[in-house]
Image (tube, rainbow, N blue to C red; front, side, top):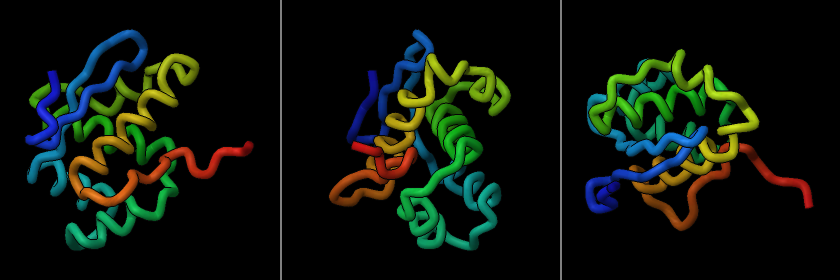
Amino acid sequence: MANRRRGEVSATVGGRHYTLCLTLGSLAELEDAFGVEDLGALAARFGSGRLSSSDLVRIFAAGLRGAGQAVGEDEIRAVPVADGLGDIAAAVAALLEATFGGASPPDPLGPQAP
């Protein structure tokens, strides 16, 4: 079970339950992956609300590793879109909100058509 006080979030993707958490180590990993110099730039990058599928994979996998699970990005890339895209996007949004705070988490899929 996820502990929100520790910044953990729960996700169910493709029928599997996961706990995600961004630690200092996983944030450093994301700074390197996104080519930014500091946490402020990383938060600004995520706050744009425009995340690619590769971004979702990186953030989700970093969150899994931050929660102590030995999961590589290839395993996340293998999740069929029909089984997990919305769930992964929602988990990433919740994870970023838990880590960086804010009034509302960004929507990684961008604005939705009515």
